[in-house]
Image (cartoon, rainbow, N blue to C red):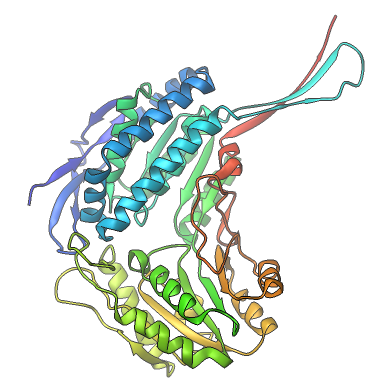
Length: 478
């Protein structure tokens, strides 16, 4: 299979990191090496920082309308390259090709919305307190930004950071995951081809700890944005706090879905099965705990298992595959630990429970019942295709159990009752709620969690505003 090298992008130039070499990129479905990714040195990091400084000095003066035009062109170029970008995502990350195409569509939507939002960065004029005076509030770009994006949605999550930062007038150094680098290279190439000036966008790969420490400690960098795990979020937030730098942290989740006894059982089972096993369960918003009211528990479980049994596991490039591999061997090992812990506590494996095949990082879609709330699967985000289905009696009980973890990213419920839906929306301590659906990640909607699931928001006006700072101006005539 032909291989490629994902290069660094610094000051509008693609460059390798000869002093440190490269790291292999592996197709998780075949375990074959499909490419390599450059590993930045300390010198590369400092060059990127200086480029971002110079790029910001220029970009901040570019009008919002001109920035809008460039972001629109980026969206158009990504649309033209949709098929090649989706193919690269599947090769590197494993998700079925159709899921990859849909992620590219979301990426386009993000750039288009942020292009429009660039021209809506409004301030406000305060009422006069005396004749001849003006008191006003204006928003300005916050400065060069360091962004860290994940492997599970390598296009959409990277785009959320780049599009908002550039739309607001900031420069950015983006550091994506080495698990899926080429799709990020493709996005940066689209930015380059659309006319993003030198230094405004820079791309680094390499040792995460070294890069994050250097960027956060640099006085040039004014804001940090991370999509990642809770432990990494704690570490970077602490480091940023030492330098009084604002952060946006979209961290882990352990989303409950509550199936009340008045729900449409078939619809709830079908939608939950499809959403749970999307991207092999490697979705921070994904279903992690299914609570079903006792009256309909057996009926829902049978229906849910039926839908799970019809999933087709395999290489995401093959037609009709609905679930691909996990991203690496570490995720396979984690699933093995989760299932072993559940069995040791007396839980029942109702479907799956083992590695799938003898090549690639596949795990069977797995459904577990009769599990206690203190089991690993119920307390730690599984981030894989393993899900518990548990029973509950009444509303107060299930809300308490749903909220008992320190995580609060997303939650879902199925019910025909408006009163129950409203009470669930009020009761769940999460930042993202879907009632009778699994709320889509809209470019215009803020995305963020409560408790340990994050700080701040990405997406929507709230996420865009995070890349700006406020000035209050009081002006008198002489």
